[in-house]
Image (cartoon, rainbow, N blue to C red; front, side, top):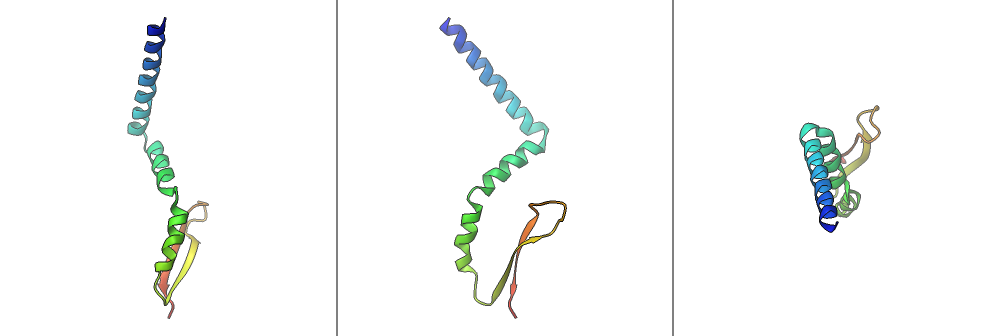
Length: 82
């Protein structure tokens, strides 16, 4: 009985691993979502920590929308104040 349960669990893990691998290989969508979540984690805190390194005389315009159809299409622009 235990041996049969272990085989079922191993089979389920193999099927899930195969499906995950296929999803990453066949469609860029899942890979893009995974990468975005991975890269967004802590990004706001890192950007705030780096603010102190912006030199004097530089103006920042944050969260400039560059695509009105995409709510997260935002850009930070830095340029000389003069």
